Image (cartoon, rainbow, N blue to C red; front, side, top):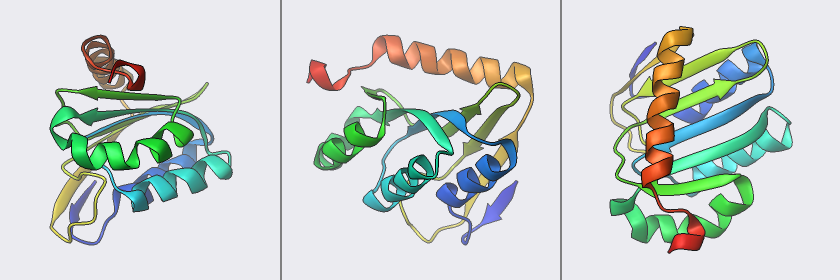
Length: 143
């Protein structure tokens, strides 16, 4: 758990991946940034991220579209949807971990809060939420 202005979501993801090993990631956010995507690229290059699905809000489309080429090169799936959640799911053969946070994938310098959860039932409920977003969202070929 963190509650401060110094902790960065990309760093939390890195720390969890260092503990659980290479994983499939599912990420939701209202908005992302080039710096977050560069960190994600490093994690993929280091083979800590096996696959990645990214869910972004439609209201942040202008900024999102500028970063779309980078997102499509890093992520196996990009979905635009009605989304304000900030959740990261990480899974592999032995672990199911969720990070639920107030933090977008941008640098704001404000106090943020996040919780790392390893409860299987909570992970599954969050995963069901992503499946709902997936079915209601738009993929790059749709816009």
